[in-house]
Image (cartoon, rainbow, N blue to C red; front, side):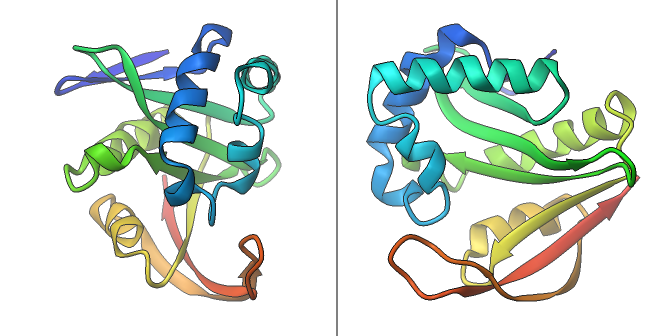
Length: 177
């Protein structure tokens, strides 16, 4: 599956993406560490990144979790990752999570990518509900939810604990098919 918009491409993860994902994670490690510590740890060297990519390809094929890359077409550089995770096939719902290279922030790229992936999730995957869980001070991520007509549902008390930090209350946004 490939979706193109503007000068960017959303595509399912491939094993050959390992090096590029490693580069993305290492270049943005301070930015990603609080909310993507596992992805960062699994990509902090090329060997681990290869294992990560192999694992994510397998999960994608088994409909356990979907990881998409966001690439700039001109350079073919991976500039972001977007997950459809926490899949509940009985209730037909999933959660979106995303990270973007600091050099591309402020361009509405994630909002545009999420718009396309919502359509894909509802029409191709058969999901009926998508969620975004975000820290209340992450205005950019809240804007991604709002720009895509997700509705605030509730505050999830002590929902997420970043590494070496206290638990954080998170905000739950949902969108229905």
